[in-house]
Amino acid sequence: MKPQQLALCVGLSLSALSATTLSSQVLASQANSDKTAFSDAYQSYLTAVKKDENVEQSAKLAYTTGLAFYGDKSDNTANLAINYAKAITAPSTISSKKSTTEMRYDLYSQAYTILANNHGKNAVETLDALIGKAENTNSANQADNDYDRVIDIAKAQNNPKFVADMQFEAASLLANKFTHKKYHKAKALLNQADDYYRNNLDENTVERIKADFLMASFAQGRKKYKEAIERLNHVVTVFDNNLSFDHSAELTAHSKLVNLYEKIGQSEQATKHCLAIAKMVPWKKSQEQTPIYRQNPEYPQNKARQMRDGIVVVEFDVDTAGFVKNPEVVSSEGGKEFERSALTALKKWRYAPKFENGQPVIASTQVQLDFKIAR
Image (cartoon, rainbow, N blue to C red; front, side):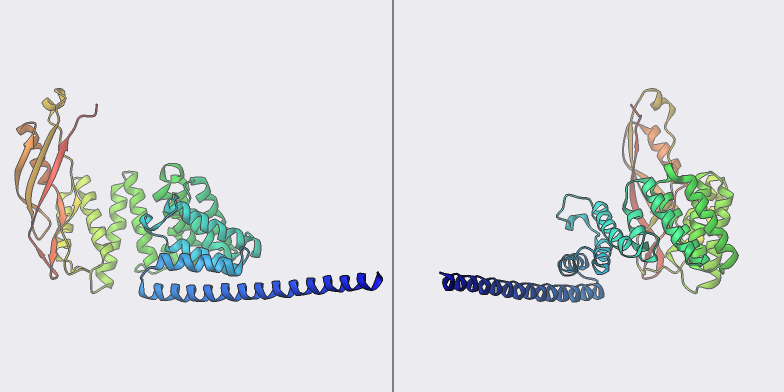
């Protein structure tokens, strides 16, 4: 009996050893397969970025294969998640029911968790993920808190310019996305960044120009039109003095100045900026006319008393200086009073003219003005 028992024991031992060896081979094969899949996917991603084609799809594949290869605790996985989040653009290409911002937020959150666990919550390695979270959250407080941490991390680097840049980015986000809840915080951050820029950077730097635009926007929101005008005139002067070509930002500044000068009743100054737009050398040789100032028509009092609505379709020319010429009513509903009001308002409209082959040209266009009483 004893020899038979020994033989059985030896047989079981050899069987277990054989199974263990086979499992290791499978794991090694799987690891090699994951590595090859990720390597191919990542090379495809780099090629897509270089060609600017199918970047989102290739970034997603690089992320999913990288997650399988590196696991969910690796810096590499975090960086791949950030790459994928940045590549997500068109909602129509996303199969998930989640919105674009929700998908981005989830990816940035995953990346932040990994990087914070690996390097600490105050590590500079977490910055991209924190900024991505702030930009894609729907919570004003979450965005504010994330950018507070970003600014604290920047301060720890002993780089005042870096701090100012992060303050400006935070101010831009809070002002544009959460202005009703975070207006005062955004304004305070912008003031700090602007103070640094004005005291330490040349006037023709991108940072100064971006700060001028945002400061002008805040000033206009508070109806401090002269302050806004001063900032935008500085932008125009910088471009005039430093560039031999015209830039889209200069058009934006001229356009906003037309609007602001009209608001304070200085139509002659508004006209000067319309003429400046007409003389600009466009960054596109051909572009359509673009409205830069529109005044709403007055609602005819008798029609308002009668609770009557109206519609007026007007055709007109936009000349090479951006002025409305030869307005004619194409069709209307509701009466002549609506037509007269529409034509009076249109005469004050201003456009950036149409360009063909680098030259401003006269262009015809139509608009429909709807007069409706809120009920």
